[in-house]
Length: 453
Ligand SMILES: Cc1cc2nc3c(=O)[nH]c(=O)nc-3n(C[C@H](O)[C@H](O)[C@H](O)COP(=O)(O)OP(=O)(O)OC[C@H]3O[C@@H](n4cnc5c(N)ncnc54)[C@H](O)[C@@H]3O)c2cc1C
Image (cartoon, rainbow, N blue to C red; front, side):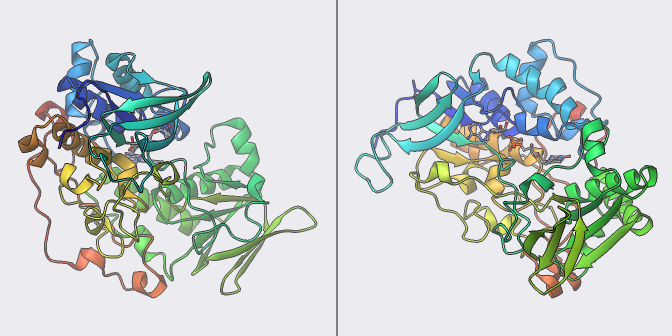
């Protein structure tokens, strides 16, 4: 069986941290590559949360091979022990990296579909030998890009989960879209501040983003009279949301939990447990009323901030043969390692091309998108994935199989998959005695200074 011509480029979808790392690894192996980015520049998704400070230090945010490429272009590495904002991650790393990669990074280019050339998903004949056709939309019109292999690093930022407690939009949620945001509010921005000041704001979610929003909004409440917050927690208890504060090997993420706990305890915050939103109604005074499936009601709501995670866009892959876990929508072999129903301490077992490969030969999901609906993705994971996948595409199977990753342990159990009573009892993998095998880190030692041990 022959493969598509190696003269054809590998298409990487998305110029985020994972996609650009993939391109750097492929270029270092002299494999032709094209990166297709829908946004106006590299790191477009990260730019949208540019005001948020990362909990990872610089030492965990720079891919080692990308760093080599950048160093050759005269790049000055940031202090590895400091913590950038999303905007700084873009301006000091992703933008220079895209510049160093050159014109292989195309902006304003949205991938709408990936297919096997001239074949829908039913056709098996000659499938593995056929190149891919990547369908793209640009301001100049639609076009096809022919590819030897495709790495989908398009993330999940474009697919926030709805407020609806059963995974689909609540009744009335779409009609109330003008009052619902899926972003951590940037309260230093005057218009955003005005939107929330003096208002009754509902925050839904228990992850790091929801904690950041709670901290910001309770601080706003201290300065702007009348501001109050209702926090909707789907689980029966918030204990798990604050758990891990002292155990997280990412100290900034642990500190976030502690600060959020203090904010909730001291601020004007009403917490409602077991609240799974069923409907959103607009009252005569234009304010919203939220009703849960079990009949709880929150009324007089001005704004809703929904931070309940993300889901992957699989529509553009409908003609590609995928083998995804039915729960997480992540590659089937990766799913057990990241499933919040079984394992959500954040310590991810090393994995690479073998776990990410799909029945569609030459197609890989990497980065945030490879986690499907699971949370706790770290950029470091994406760097290791792309190193391994690039090696596999280049035919270096020994390097592809090698694992060069150690991830910090978050000590935080319980993910979105846990239902009320389960989470209240703790459990999950924090109780499990077996630690994953952690293997030597493929990050240069100078970048390791300041990294959590
Ligand atoms: C608020 C917040 C804080 C975070 N903090 C940390 C942290 O401290 N440490 C950490 O390790 N991780 C953190 N993360 C996780 C972080 O998102 C990832 O580490 C990283 O951004 C994932 O990179 P990615 O390249 O996989 O996806 P993304 O960053 O989402 O990049 C995907 C890219 O693909 C593009 N794209 C999407 N669809 C298409 C399409 N159809 N065609 C073409 N292009 C497309 C997007 O515009 C985007 O540029 C944080 C996430 C959030 C939301």
